[in-house]
Image 1 (tube, one colour):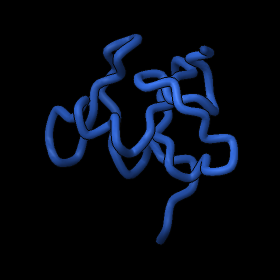
Image 2 (tube, one colour; image 1 turned 30 degrees about the vertical axis):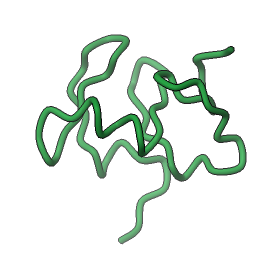
Image 3 (cartoon, helix red, strand yellow; image 1 turned 90 degrees about the vertical axis):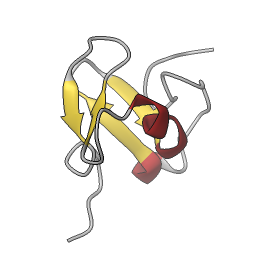
Image 4 (tube, helix red, strand yellow; image 1 turned 45 degrees about the vertical axis):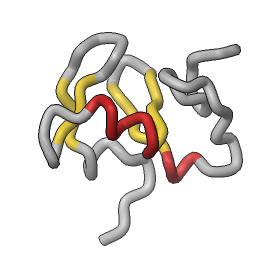
Length: 66
């Protein structure tokens, strides 16, 4: 099972048709909405499981609603 996008790095589920549900890190890791909850540092940020970079929850989405 691939751990690169569009697959979730944590659960491995393929989000090819739902890429809007993924959060991305600069290290080329994607994490789905469900798994990002387990990686939250605070209500506004999550920690990448690969590189340990802190990412903003809203800004790390590929598609953002205004």
